[in-house]
Amino acid sequence: MLVGLDEARQAKLVRLLVGPRRSPAQSLAWMAGLLIVPTVVRAALDTGSLGRPFVTYWPALLIASLALELRYALAYTVIASLLAQWLFGGELWFSQVSVVRVLFFGLFVLSGAFTVFIGSMLRQTMRRLGEVNDQRESYNRELRHRVRNMLTLIQALASRGPKATSAMDFYKEFSLRIEGLAAASDLLQIGAEAEGKLPQLVRQTVAPFDRDGRIQLSGEPCLLPADSCIPLIMALHELCTNAVKHGALSGERGHVELSWFIGPEGSTLYVLWTERGGPQVSPPKREGIGMKLLMPHPGLDGVELTFDPAGVWCEFRIEGAKRL
Image (tube, rainbow, N blue to C red; front, top):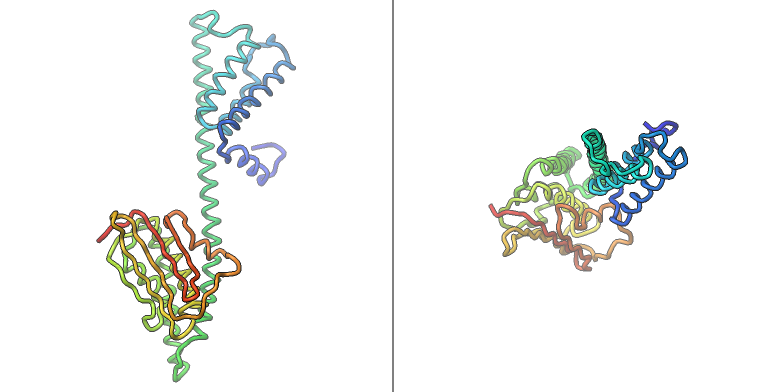
């Protein structure tokens, strides 16, 4: 624990030290600084008369093991040991080889290497924790967006409900739509644990939005890679939500054609979403978080989204699919 700093500042300092992946030039600059500072400090204290020439270099070695990649940290250990022994130890250790000198140098190498490897493990662990935290924040943002979309969609379903002859009839049909929406949301957990099958996954995803069979599905049975299930479900959910709010499913005459096929290479899946018969389309004035779901990212290797005036058109490309 760093004395005098609260936990937030400690965490920020550690992230600045451990987090960045430094270029070769930056790593060499760090090595130079971590050699110059302890050398100047040691020279200011004494010129070697107190012995222990490496004493001021140990803190710098610890910093190097955390801030630098393994090969640079090991190189720093070798250079710092030779420099310290030469400047403050009287002579290089191998100028007069003896059993005692070799033994002590071997112990030094082991302790230095141990320090470097422990620092390297800590650095990798901290970076992994940082990636997990970033992923968690991304999921939280997407979750908030989905909740807002869900509430808007519920309002849309309620306002465009059937012309029921009684309140009870409307309640029954509206409840069925809400249950279907909940079932589609449950698919997100399925995608995190197993490969998804088409057309089952697509059919369950779009079912809550499919009024009177106006989302037409066509495609061959196939198997999605596990990493593509959640991105595809969320992307289709976003397209369905926008279609109900603004697009082809917002009126009574529009429809959606959702098709897919595996390309000639045998492992690339193409999913095509086409809206027809809805109101005239124009590009959004601003890109919200929902648009990020319709961009290429891990699991969706390619996304092409077009705001055709006749209807939104979107194509997804997914690598690693298999025919069933």
